[in-house]
Length: 376
Image (cartoon, rainbow, N blue to C red; front, top):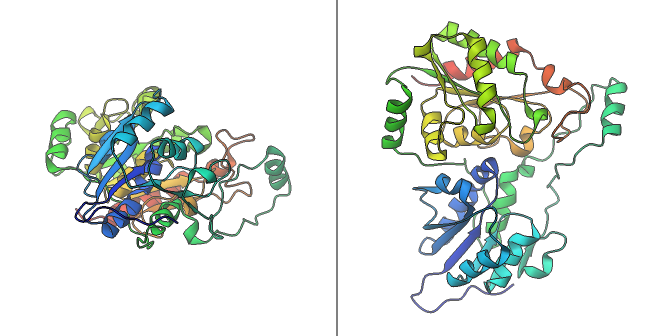
């Protein structure tokens, strides 16, 4: 390993190559906090996809955000990194390109996970720990075999340190940072919340259930839409709350379908799908008392804003990518008992039994628990 040396009185310049997905980005925030604790006087720059740039506004552990567009070339990103004259790079993704960017930029120390095709690009390749567990996609033949056997035996739960959060903490620990987990945290200002209240009519003192029925990864993550409607309607009737429907541009039609089925009076229904920037999404989620959601980016965002989430898990594992600090009782994570779950596939090759086995009554009960445990 190379040593971290700078001129006397010159702060260390650290660049962190960020990840590409919203939920993953939220799970990197504990590592950023630990990195700041390790180097409190250093200048820390985060390199982020432009679509996620707003996530880091006001974040206390980052001094500067350098964004890039999806079509930016390897060479253009490397040139910008070179101009930063960084002393050390912490490379959070496992991709060869993310490591090559810092190599071509001439960053003298490059820390990243040991991974095929890129180890020679790193000065500090961090070994994959024994407790790590890859999100292996089950072959269709294995899924059909498990279902045909009618076995109720589940795979043993992985070590809690297999959570994706620890992947990022391990990397900063290679620089001497504390690897202990922390709750993911995001920053949103009171002014931003107030602006969203005015724009979308979240009346002060009113209570709102957030509903996020989409999932960008694919349909295997999506609990049936009609069940979201049934739960939202039951909670609205029980707690006299408003319903806020979230989603991206690809969820606009789904949000309209949910709203039509809910048949809720206009003062108590807000359709925000496709209507918010990333910063506005943070502020609007902060207005909710509970978020009912699939396993997707807004789930992580809400948890990082201390909003309890209720999540039906089917094709994915809450042990590996669950929201918040693993084991946080505020979040209600409902796991499938299907023998083929988790399969980590985008599309179910059979009948989506992992999510269809999770009933409306189960989810209503968990939302009720989260709701009543949340202070007014």
